[in-house]
Length: 169
Image 1: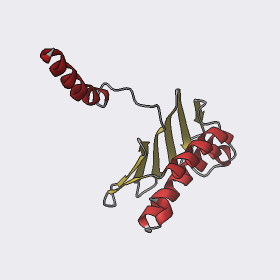
Image 2 (image 1 turned 60 degrees about the vertical axis):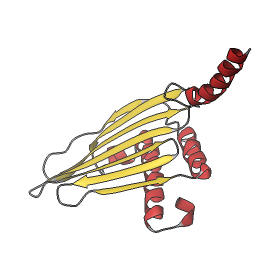
Image 3 (image 1 turned 180 degrees about the vertical axis):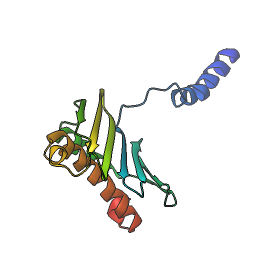
């Protein structure tokens, strides 16, 4: 009987640890990764790479360029902010994978490479958009406009955090 009590006590202590360990099943939440690369094709060529990731309610933002010091931001999103992002993804049909290739211009121009990976609940999507930035072909493309709306919403959250607004934390 003493051994049974010890075993039960041990199980009660070990089970919660196992349930929260690395093999525990998490509720599928929002995972989002956007990488935007803008490359200047001119005499003074440069590229700017912005990556924004949302995972487990945490937003991480990185911006790198040869000409500037890297910028890193990380903060916890509120439940309301996560809900607004999820609603924007659903409203803009961004859970449908797609690939958009706009024309690449010759001469001085800026190339765009936009890559989006989304996981929401049990749905996954990948969106890839490439071409010359600020052209009619891309600007009028519905998938590009919808993806850009999501990117702008994420940039607004990052900027709001930098400005110290309480609604962006």
